[in-house]
Length: 488
Ligand code: NAI
Ligand code: CS2
Image 1 (cartoon, rainbow, N blue to C red):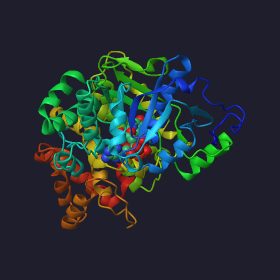
Image 2 (image 1 turned 60 degrees about the vertical axis):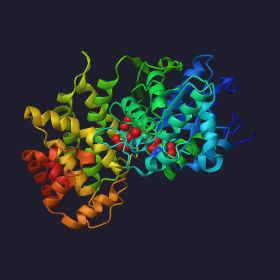
Image 3 (image 1 turned 180 degrees about the vertical axis):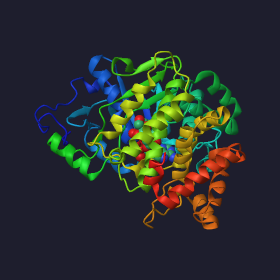
Image 4 (image 1 turned 120 degrees about the vertical axis):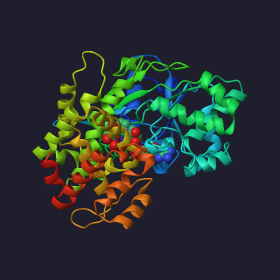
């Protein structure tokens, strides 16, 4: 097969993986061939393959969108590149762990299910974004009113949601007497394995309670903490990759050099020795997930909303403003770190400093708009737990109140200059309706806090909290986001 990426076409110094890809079998089916997976799990797996004689290959599946990417991937024998961009230097790697791909749009649902049911498949992993779990963000339980779930409950053997695909594939395996696979979430969700398990079991219980019992006994859902900043590819990053490679790679992706993966060691059917690359297997991932979600993702969301409103297109741009830098660091150390319960020896101050350095990487153009997306699915887990901690302990949470107020102004859909904001969120219609009723007035704060799926029922009952968020909201509206951040 001839394609762009080969040892003869690549620039000197860049080469194909040296391991024999023919030995690989699709033992991992991955749902969500997006930016992140390419630069994280697939890359780490490729590094393990280079060090061992293991046969763990990956079959990539995009359930929603990404058809073109799958077509392009196939056209280059499933090889693609990752450019790790530091402040001064860039390293390019060619990834060889991906060997197959499917898309329900052109291969059909049944081909996807048959792949997931194949005997050698030991792991189904996922990076399907927070909304892909079809849960109520406040409770972590399956949202039975979710449009995909409603359709899948009617025809479970013709699934659309990732959750229904997993349940149907496990049903087929059980009927065929094939051992189950491990379900491994790699999304930014607190207790991602627990949430995946709850969603799968809730769905299975509704369609076949007996199957649900079998899943409960036979399938594991390890939690994982994943970390690497991987902005969406742009024409600019792809052109840079072309220059670095010597050939174009439409599947190429740029990311930061930092990488971390902490995995709960709980697999029913084996796993690659990811620890031979950078991963760490531990008995309990939850404290690490909490640390990352609150300190990194919490401050990221804060910077995304207040940064976007303040006229900053990228996270690295916000870091050029000393007030944003300080507010992000203080948020991590004063609002988030005190709420964590970390294993002895964890140095949160060093962690926070490293995060500020990572955010400042000028080579990484991570759009505030991208991180601001899907806030309804993100803010409760990035800020909600810490808020409740502070309200209970009567400690200072002003950065969290400002972050939530920033989100509220952002979802109004209009920026400080009166320009429209392209608010991408499964609840964007609800936000529109609320803003039509209240406008950018104090009363909108209570109306937004009243969305139970995001904030549950307790926060709105706390007058002091409602007042704090309302004050922050009014400050952003009257003085602008930059001044509001400086006031912290
Ligand atoms: P992306 O937009 O490049 O890819 C999203 C993927 O999710 C696509 O493959 C798409 O097919 C799939 N998807 C979207 N909606 C879905 C649904 N309802 N059901 C099933 N699949 C669905 O995004 P990216 O950057 O790959 O991030 C994906 C997730 O990975 C994030 O939401 C986050 O949870 C996690 N992550 C991302 C990091 C990053 O820096 N990009 C870092 C750490 C974690
Ligand atoms: C970001 C994350 O898009 C977002 O919401 O906060 O994707 C972030 O880049 C990663 O979690 C870093 O590991």
